[in-house]
Image 1 (cartoon, rainbow, N blue to C red):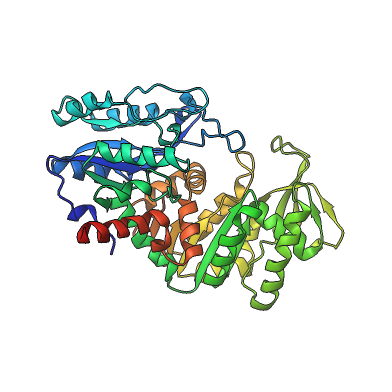
Image 2: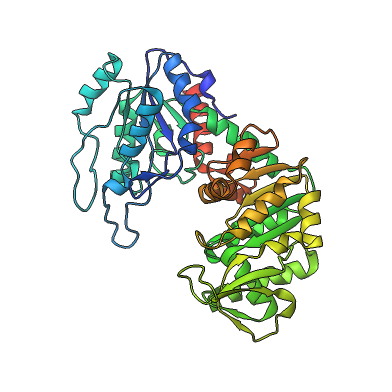
Length: 430
């Protein structure tokens, strides 16, 4: 069983809470939706007498090759703190730790103890730790990882995980649960509840999946394929599928990916789940939507050996195609993790998709992923506002987490969720 924040005793306790406030790009908040969705948990902690220490990751400050950590204003939590201060009229303090130019923050210095005393005495409303990925131990292995886990645990009495979008088992989402009582926040609970509606969908179940890379989506793509009744593809994933099926070449699609996609084509020849979007937009350049340099192409005219420039969008008329529109309008559950075009210039495919899906008033419509949600809001702002409180719509805060959970077959297969359940068992018996 998942331990819930409602079961915790917060009064007078220091509460370390992990959010997924990863909404900052180049030092600016792109969309505060993920922050706003966690306010219920934050209110609950304070209302029940807890004193909160907040934390999140922002971006990927660690270079995968050199392992060097770059701590810059572009991936700082300061914009998030500023937003929360304005939103809540609360005084949040960000501790200032010494930064090593190659290894980030080496650990939590003892002088944070004074900040915690100020928190206990209500001199500050809360503490917001620097970007968790600025700390050397967060994504490390071995001694630095263990030290950081103990240091985090020593800050607080209770740990709350409300970071559904942060599914990777890092110190601040996973290891911390080994040391102090740990619980799931309200957003985590809500996301798991809705994720179960995808794992066990009302049928017919339609998924729409797109991505900029085929190789990174292969495993979740096959898991989704097994789950759905119908599947619509977009982006480079769709381009790769088209190359493999029709024997064509599309600029930007690698031979290795095409080879990998042949298996999906072969499987679908028997099961016939993939719903092809018959009209696509070819562009001579990726520099923008330049008059005279883009055109609509029809799949019906493909010939083996044909070569095409960049395919950067789905043409809107694809969604008026009889087979495509019938599949969308007859679905009972629809999951979308897709930006159909190369934004910001090629976006008509995504707009047509969202508008067609909305015409299905009875389906449960579930959107996952920051880019998917941002595109929805940008292209259909009126529709977005009108459906925010619509029970037939749900917007996940973590698209990658949804895909990973589908791949594992259960939200309880996610390692940070497993860690919470193991913590409940360990602290109940120990």
